[in-house]
Length: 135
Image (cartoon, rainbow, N blue to C red; front, side):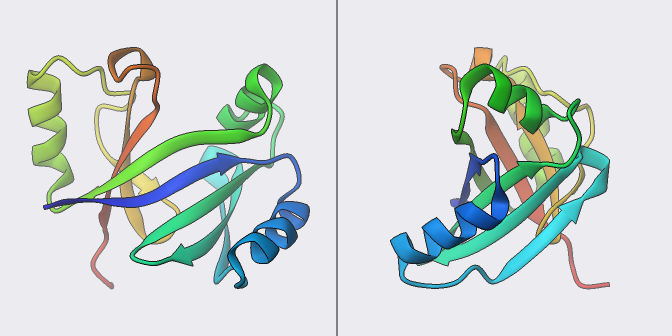
């Protein structure tokens, strides 16, 4: 099983972006969460079976801050939910994709995540994610 989980959008100001996307989508975000290990604050909007994730840097050395400095606001990544992230990582590595992390790490919205380098995915940063069972 693989499905579109969310599209990640880098923003400079999360509060302003939440207001804009609430107007755009006709609904409020359902969650704001900080992922301290990645120096990012996220906000999620449910859109059908998928989500929009807004990402604001919380530190100038974070990946999102560097992305904003280089490319400005906009689509940062596309995420696909998989049933078994470890198996999918092994499969993609065998197919020649470069993974940005050797093991899944904890991400926002109760997920394990792994990223695929854009240079091996036609310039698109791809995130794999798997829901973590409720503990």
